[in-house]
Image 1 (cartoon, rainbow, N blue to C red):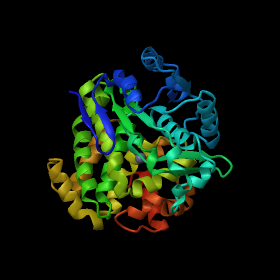
Image 2 (cartoon, rainbow, N blue to C red; image 1 turned 120 degrees about the horizontal axis):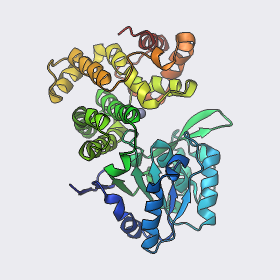
Image 3 (cartoon, helix red, strand yellow; image 1 turned 90 degrees about the horizontal axis):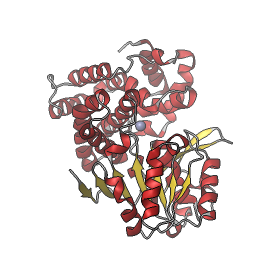
Length: 384
Ligand SMILES: [Zn+2]
């Protein structure tokens, strides 16, 4: 079932629709697109096939894949050099979070005179960029979780400052997105589960945020229903195209919904991801019930509404938490952070870092550093 959407950007939805890539390039006046992806994907025939597809249509396509799993400022600079020396006129960003984030940042920086760090997502910094010089971006996600294909920002590592920075510009939203489930079938079950739980955490945290944004609430609800119905199937049978396609849509919806903000799961997952080499989606999945419980005083009614919409057996916050616990079990996701090698040696520091994280600003309760440390200890020890 193929369909085209124009919200939140132009989205072509359907298995096999990567075959329309050359048409999409032409519609955006790209004659010399640069494919940006990660080195792992660059080795797969998928990338070679996409290159020939675009070449055969008479376009001169280039490839840049020298990026780290967490792309750095140096990676972006090298990508800009490749973009300029190849005289490219647009970017095709392909991949999971890293390929998409790097591609978007390379397009942003291609013709700017400011440094990438001048465009960190603080105040109105983005006004420093010359918006007219940002070339068009096409995004093809190969995982269903980050939703970076509809995001207005990239996470880039500033190695000098040893920090992950959010680089933001409204024109970083790709002008065209292709959600082709066939690009995600190679993802192994544990990564399908972890990325899918990240998509769920985006919709769930956006739905619990206190911000006024009813549109985002609506999107979050249906995003969660898609995860409930299709993630277990996509994990059980990676070749289930229907399940994969719904999960890609759920991922795009999660990232669209979190314009309403995130919360305590991401506030804790960000410092934990930086300090321990743990998967972002797994961290959110493990933390999920503990953070829901810590927010109980503020989300009782939200839990009832959500449980009703998801058609859970028990219309309450406890019913919602029970569902999360069962889903994690079905997906072989651990119940404690201890099982993924995290101990409470740095619980106090991490509590402070979580409190300062931008995601903490839209948690339903303004949790203090000590409360974040407490959630962390509970998640380490399995004390729900
Ligand atoms: Zn996330």
